[in-house]
Length: 209
Image 1 (cartoon, rainbow, N blue to C red):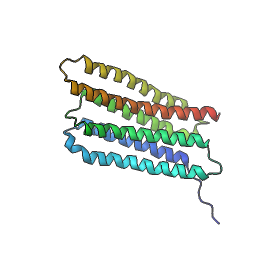
Image 2 (cartoon, rainbow, N blue to C red):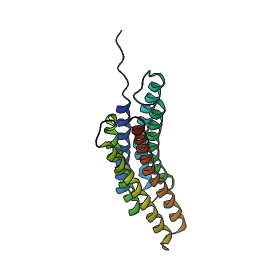
Image 3 (cartoon, rainbow, N blue to C red):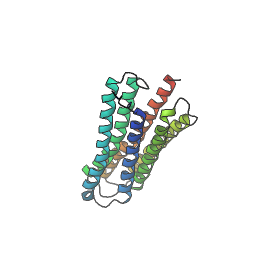
Image 4 (cartoon, one colour):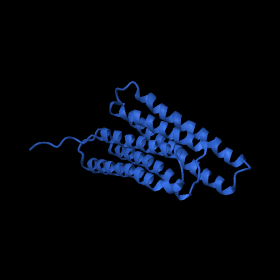
């Protein structure tokens, strides 16, 4: 009887990180070309399709790790990393959903900067994920993890400044300040989620030296 090919967890993770980059592309494209919230429903459908693809990949990961006799890394680590990537995908989708729910009329410059930083974080995470299958031998893997962490630090700085800009501008009304302070918080946690994923990858490296 022919053996079924062994499930490739690393390929699955690469697919998840590619989906995160695709979502971040939609986010930045939408914010830069923003018109009205009424134009968002098709965009939400598009970004949700990426998130749904991620759910399908994670389902395959969970199914295989439950029965795999000898997975390449600890089962707990496989699951933690899949869940972390799922969070990245969920959080990016969440930003656009809340822009729609809050009926946002215009996009401030700091939001564009945040979208660009989220995209940079996802791209850095994707590069690290491409090298993940070689983490024991790779000379670049550690630096790729550091790159993700650097973008998270930039996200913290931008969040601090963007939020301060809201509360120190007396020309802004209270509803606008409340809306964007919440949205900036949701954008900042996208960078946090990328860093958390990279930290799990770094922990896996340390456990398997």
